[in-house]
Length: 245
Image (cartoon, rainbow, N blue to C red):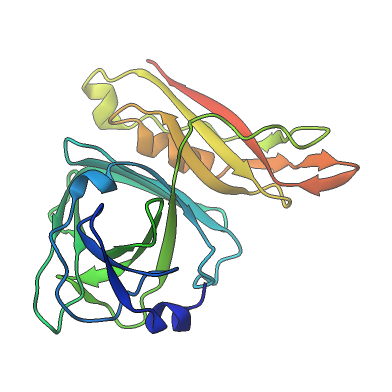
């Protein structure tokens, strides 16, 4: 999906979401009134893909979880690098003609700065998100495409031999979590690419205070890739990480 196509679409009202969306795709750059956002439609787990063609990274993926208690968890993985944040989120909109709305404002735990992302639906299970500032896009920012995750199960096996870890650095136990007596298990699903690098990290079972350490460690794992008919293929790998002292 190209940026030009996004700009070319026209708004139509979709009552189910209380938003203006486009037929076939969503427009991010058309100014005008947007109806009240239905926050319920944002709740759930969203998977980040590179389907927009906006990213230059070889591999880019991640996960965004938006809960009804306004708590979010976000992971992003690309080209061997990973990041994780969690905290509270709020949804805003304005009707000004020079603004892009609605937008999500993320308040990461332990930080005073906020990360604002302009978003728009394209159908019930697709979310287009880009960096923004109070409903206005940041020049040159990229569009991320999220699809709604319907199941926490791994996709059906489609390989003859699964991925095997070659480099598996353990997670660094956060000092604050150790001091607070936080222990437990974080379960991740890793999408291992044909090059043996982690392309996507999905949190299946999380633990507040330990998720970031688990995601950061997982992004550094290197695998012998899965094989199908003797050729390297992408495949999912389940990774549990225990935190005890």
